[in-house]
Amino acid sequence: MKTPLGLRALRLVTRLRVVDVSNASYEMFKTIMASDDLTDQHWEATRLLVEGAWTQNIEDSPPPLGEPTEILKFLDYHLGLQGAGEDHGSSITLAMDAILTNGRRYGDWAQPPPLIVECVGKFDCLSPSFIRGVRSALCPDNAFRLRGRVIGLIALISNQLFNSPTPVIEPEEMSEFSDHIAAYMIDHVHHEPQIWRRGLTIFLEMLHSPKWRDHIPTGFWSILAYCAEADEGQESFRWCLQNAIGLLEFTKGVAGGGGSKWWYCSLWIHYDKLDTVVRDKVERIAKEMLLGDGLSDLNLYLNLIGREVARTQTVVDELPNRDRMGEVGMKLRTRLINLEGNHHRLSLITGGR
Image 1 (spheres, rainbow, N blue to C red):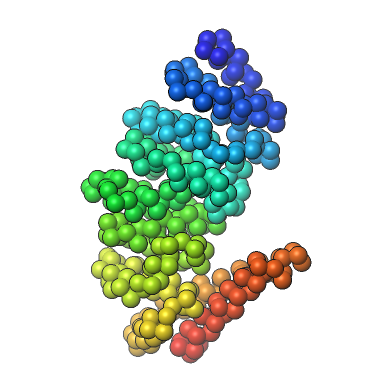
Image 2: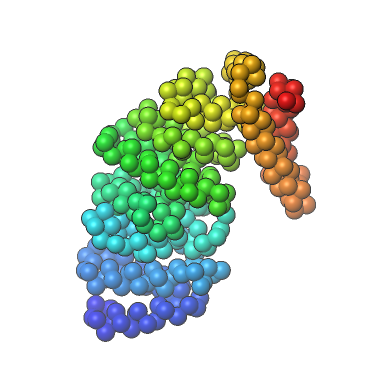
């Protein structure tokens, strides 16, 4: 495969969009990637093999990924090149497809399987070259699909990235990086539920971090309109609710009032998870808003909670019979009851106005 003729043959074969070629491409890819002494021709071959293994025409039967060790090594190398000024966006996109959705482009999955999450967590994703590549690939002039896959990667490593004890990005670069994340989310947040979830994961880690909190762009706060989709098992989610009052004070300093508006919205959506002290504070604020010009915001919160009630009810109604009385069904019904309670409590305060 080292010769130009071998590469030409490989280029022709990997254009065949059939399952056997897909599986064989991935096996050959792993064999090449097992070497520690890869030449430029080896890397060119791996790019062809990644294309042969993961492409939109074989989404229904991508090769089973298993541990993504070789894909991560491939991604690390090409993100390094991307950060150095070479364009490898298509190869990075396909590698990220393998990790995030195992090649199924339209799979509505909040995150990859636990094995992949664990492997990514153990990989050195915070090296300077890796992060430079991530920043470069996320630039707004790059392809939508590439940027979306990079957002997925950032969500996977967000705890490491935003809570690293040592700086990963220079302070003067943090605002630009945050702006690029927000630009993607603001432009495309309405497309897919998985984008909401990944955006929320990133946002909550940034809000949790004293180093990143001040760099949250004004427009990014509106992601909290979808905060019912947040991962309740995420440590930063729990921390933010436990520190709800302190964050309310922080948001008063956010330009334009968007921080206060959307953080307060999230507290009503998750009202059932708040302790008594915070609930009393949240209710007092609502009553004060009624005396001013806050009725439109309160009605917005009611509509957002109502939307989530309707969505959750639909999910409950569509559950297969085998799941209705199981853990999944019980969890969904409990969430539905809590959301209805949150909506009712705010309705009592507004009095239907």
